[in-house]
Amino acid sequence: MSAQPPKTIQYVYHFRYNDGREKKFTVELDEQTLAVIRPDQADQPELPEWTRLKFSQCENCPLSDEVSHCPVAVNLARVVNAFRADVSYETSDITVETPQRTYVKNTTLQKGLSSIIGVYMVTSDCPILDKLRPMSRFHLPFATPVETFFRSISSYLTAQFLLMRQQKEPDWSLKKLIEIYKAINIVNRGMSQRLVKASQKDANVNALVILHSFGDGIGYFIESGLDEIEPMFAVYLNESNGEIRPSPSGLDAGEKPHAPAEDGRPESAST
Amino acid sequence: MNEKILVVDDEESLRLSMKFKLKAAGFDVDVAEDGEVALEKLKNESYDVVLLDINMPRMSGIEALGLIRQRHPQTEAIMLTGFADFSTAIECLKTGARDYLVKPIDTTELVTRLRSLLRSRSSEKALHEVQQHYTAVFLHDMLEPLKKVQQVLDQAAGSTDTKERNKLLSDARTATGTMTRKIQDLLDASKASQENPEELAARIRTIRGNGV
Image 1 (tube, each protein chain N blue to C red):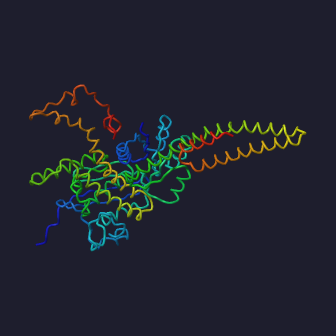
Image 2 (image 1 turned 180 degrees about the horizontal axis):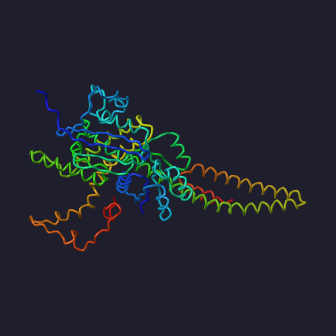
C-alpha cells in the first residue's frame, strides 16, 4: 500500500499589476512539519549561481560543506527571479488565499513580496530561521510591524509554555528571543547579498529589508514598545488574588484616554 | 538638547525600526513617508540630519535631497538605499549628501556615522564662526598700521632731506615686514587648525597679542 501524501496548507499569492500583468505563487506547507513542499526535482528549473551555499554564505551558517545549495535561497529562487526587474514601491492588487480566509490589499510590491518571502524563508529548513517556523502556520499577510512583533512574541511565549510543561527551563524574559533575531538578521544580511546579485531593481532586496527591520526592531519593542500596549492588558494587570478588577473604561483611574493615531495606535506612542 | 533626526522612507516598518533604534541611541526622531511630507515638516521644524531613502514614489530621494540642500542648507543628509550602485552614490554626494548607506543597515554603524557627522558638523560650524569673527577683527587690525605706513610714505615723498627720507622709508619697510609676517602666521594657523576652532582662536589671539 502506498504512503498517503501529507496533508498540506496552501497560501496562494496573486499579484495583479496596474498594467494588467499577473503573477501567481502557491506556497505549500506540510501541515505537520510546516516544511515547504518543493516541486519534484525534475520540475525544478536549474538553480542559479546565487543559490549555492558558498555564494555569500551567512557568517553564522551552521550547514556543512557537503550541502551544495542554501535552502533559503533555493526556496526563494522562483519568486526572486519573477520580481528581479521590479521596483519596490510599484503598487499592485495582491490577493492572498489561505485555507481560512482571503486577504486583498492594494499595496507596494515590496510589502507583498516581504510576506511571501518571509514564509518561504522560515519554512526552508535553515537551522537559524527554523525558530520562526511555527509562525508560518498563523501567517498574516501585509502585517504591520506591531502585529508582527506581537505574533512573534506570542509564538515564542507559547513555545516557552510548552517547554515548561515538559519540565524544561522556559525563558519568560524574552532574552533568547532577542538573540534569535540577532542571528536571523545575520542571515537576512547574507541573503540580501544574494538578492542583489539576483536582481536588476530593488523590489526583492527591499522586501528582505522589511523583514530585517522586524528583527532589528523587536529588541527595542520589548524594551520600550511593550509599555505602550500595556494598558490594553489592564484587565489582567489589575487582577489580584484571582479577582479581576478592570477599571470602568479599561484605563487606570485618572488616566486620560488616548486619541487614536492614524494607524490606530495611541497618539502618545513612539512607534 | 538631543539632536533631531528626520527619517524619510516610504515603508512603515523601516521608519518604525529606525525610530526605535535612534531613540534608543539618544536622538529625537521624527518620520515622513515621502519627500513631499519631509519638505513640509522641514518648513516648520529644524532637523540636524535627514535620513533619506533614495527609491521613493512621487519624488525620488535625490530630488528631495536637492530641494532640502537648497532650502535648508543647515540640515545634513544621509542617503539610504536597498540597491547600491556606484553612479547613484556619486550623484547623491554631488547633490549634497554627506553619506550613503546600504540597507539592511547595521544599527551600530548608523549611529556611529550619525555621531561622526554631527561632530564634524558642529566643528565646522564653530570654525566658521571663529573665522568670520577673526577675519573682521584682523582686517581692522591691519587697517590702522596700513594707514600709518601710507602717512609715512607720504611724508617721505614730500621730504627733501635725504637722511630723513631714508629713515621714513626704513620705518615703512619695518612696518610692512611685520604685517607680512602676521599675515603669514595667520595663514599657517588657519591651515594647521582647520578642524579645531578652539586652537585656531587661541593662535589668532597670540598673533594679535604680538602687536603690529
